[in-house]
Image (cartoon, rainbow, N blue to C red; front, side, top):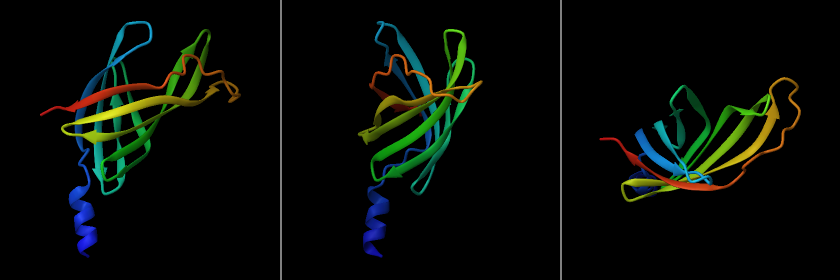
Length: 130
């Protein structure tokens, strides 16, 4: 019982609205925001951008570690692809240090595999809105 209580006290609380900026390889920046809902070791919520929101799938929390996946539609030339993007990171002080990387992409029309363009592992920080 004591170890369970201690583990619960050491676990980070990721629930809330978090915002940050990602520096893109082309020198531009992208604002990102997430609404996280944490229930024990399960993480849910959404990522928000200018025009839409994307639900979090397969979200987990273990102490100060966070991991989740987004499945987004991305345009590649004349095609629309469904792309799985994995986010992993950890709580550091009052911030979350996250990394994102595209895992896989399929063509929406045929479900055939699609080439992952600009598949760069990107790191960034999020701050909780108060």
